[in-house]
Image 1 (spheres, rainbow, N blue to C red):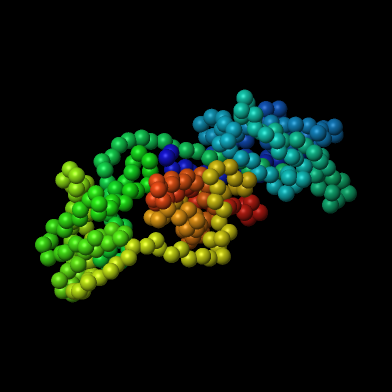
Image 2: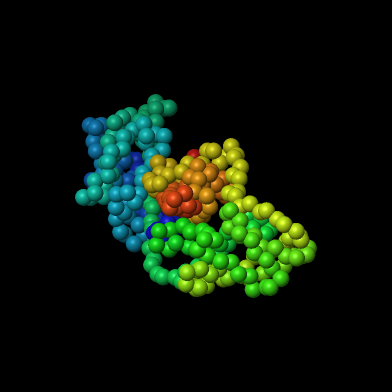
Length: 322
């Protein structure tokens, strides 16, 4: 899985009319066209040319280091007047430029007075960047606790992603405290104390065939004397109106400007994809996100756990940006 992504949303209102003054064009990104240079100069040229309707301009995006953003790493969004005036074409990978065709030149002007006035046309560029890193790690793991005395030890599957739960036919749980007894359950093991108590105990998980200790972990127990029959099940996932509106995208191509809220990482232990997606939506909604982009699915083998990761983003309202 690649490193965690982050989104940079640039809000630039760019215009030029008969008076040679323009608004600030960018903060970190620079938007230009192959034909006329800056976006304000491009709009001005189209407004001055009475035969410009049907003209195509090709938009390119540069970052703060003057590197041109390639196709697929940025998206463009026009304001209401711009949407009426232009139609967006495809990005050409040879030039990394996105075509905008002027379909309605009259939409470039305001007609609320005796003489049409050039309008301010806003163009928003959103660039998606990624970071990559590589390394190694020792085998790690833990225990998925569903109740105070039930444990489901697992090992991280670093090759395929996700986790692999350990079963009693191949592994043995051995507590370090002699007062704790172990019972095999259908979904794992249960740990019991002889009398009412609350304590944290350490235990080892051993491979029965080799005798190797594959995991050392601990669990906090709150149990009473007598038999117990713990069950280990997937947590229920509540449903909310806000969560139902969260957009889930495997791509990072958004048609609206957005800002990063936080990276997200969800594990669903029983391999239920529907429940995992709902958990992803609920978590995104709880942190105020409108969408999760770049979602990656790692399906467990044979009905094993599912791992989902992505980047939670919040849409930006251009009408409130000055």
